[in-house]
Image 1: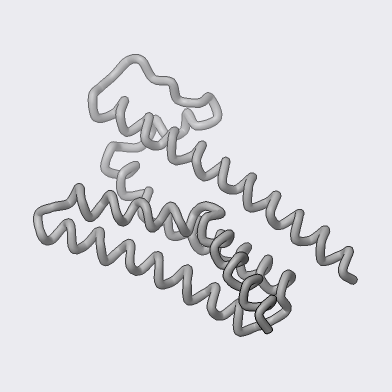
Image 2 (image 1 turned 180 degrees about the vertical axis):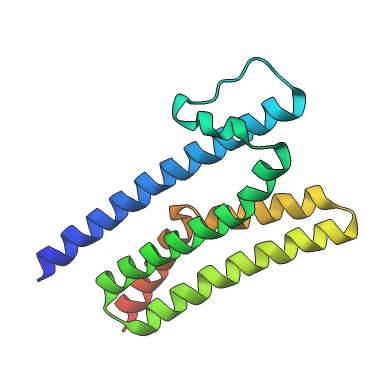
Length: 155
């Protein structure tokens, strides 16, 4: 049973990594198409598999990034919860993981809105982007795994 759990954890972490690279690839190409559209540039370096992005306007691309961020954060949260459950077999830690992802994501949105409504959008965006990056990368999972392991060893 332990061996199967270990294999599942490795597969989930592999899926986490692959999804992370795909997310980065997608957002880099969206940003590239936004640049090309905004500046009417002719020097596009859009990946061939992302040529469908050329049919979208700048505002469509810009606003598509918000729901995509949410979708990826939810998927990363789901994968993190599964890893935490397999590692520790405690539902309370899974609930804490869910709460952590939700807290960091909502905090990012609050900073984004605070920056937007205070007229200091760049500052709010910078913090929001950092916090969203925590939910869309292994960063938050690594911190939670280390904290839970530390708690488990102190019992």
